[in-house]
Length: 121
Image 1 (cartoon, rainbow, N blue to C red):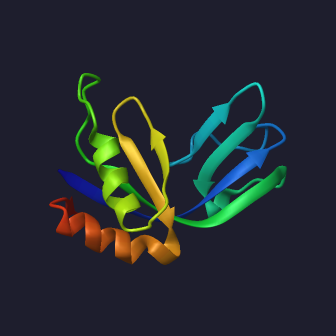
Image 2 (cartoon, rainbow, N blue to C red; image 1 turned 30 degrees about the vertical axis):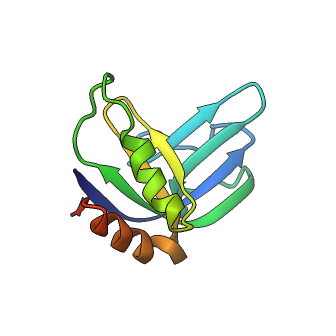
């Protein structure tokens, strides 16, 4: 399976509202629940109305479009990383999954995923 490095630094945020979020930018992910408004975006795009943030994330994308019947893809990747003491923040879209790790763990994540048989592009 191919994993593509997304060459961007990301931030994970809580925001007051989405009025300052440009949804037309690439790699902007939102989550709206009964408890919070979350945003994952390039650090350069963090809005002023952010109430909490965690910077310094890097991302891999699973390059294949994933069929909904496929089972365990994210679990296997997260398991490899967990076995090597690397925490993740996962984002799923209709087509695929994104795996974010802290920047300080990214090189190690790259190495252990390659050793586990993933191709990093």
